[in-house]
Amino acid sequence: MKPITRDVLINALAKVKPETPRVMFEALSDKALDAEFRAVTAEYNE
Image 1 (cartoon, rainbow, N blue to C red):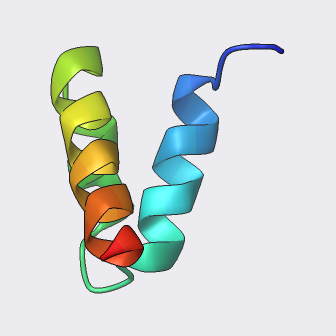
Image 2: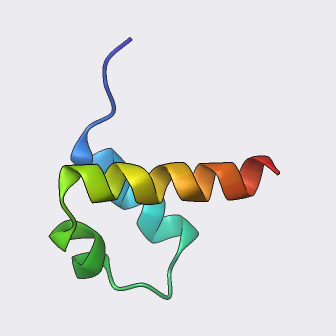
């Protein structure tokens, strides 16, 4: 399986959190972007 690219993470977060400007996600470090994605995933898995 191929790893998820940064663009895919940003696109997914932008769809889930449309109130957050896309540039905010683009400005995050890789580690922070991963943490944000994990938080959203955990929230939806509850």
